[in-house]
Image (tube, rainbow, N blue to C red; front, side, top):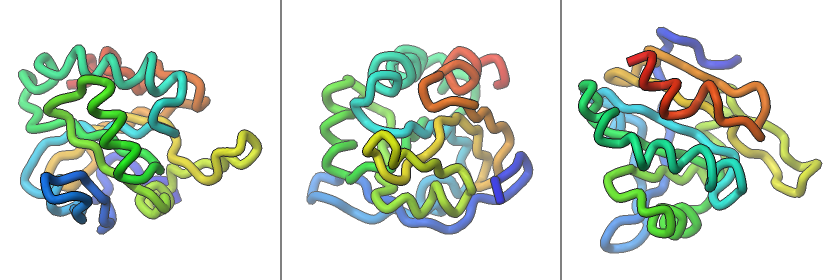
Length: 160
């Protein structure tokens, strides 16, 4: 079942890069007591994600934070090493990258997709959501993984 506005995020554990290497971070660690914009992409370095989706959030980061948002997080069904390299290459300082390496979070919220036809395996659908203290307050899911329109930074800003 797909998560809906008003639902609490399920408990999940992501991997993040820390100064000491990969570390675990739970949904409570990321979302409890905070207003977070969570952006999901099918894959780091993939064309739409790398050229169209993430750059908008990098460019609009300060504007988003200026609207009472405590942080921006990006998740993908990639390993923590790939997401760390992508964050650095994209110049995404101040944005948290949450590796959902096995797709457990994407599956738990019903926003996983089958990319096996393209050699990608199970991935996350592309979306942007506003999470307030673990509760989904806005959810913008793309109808196609090659689009970054309703989940763009510009579209999200209109809903804040």
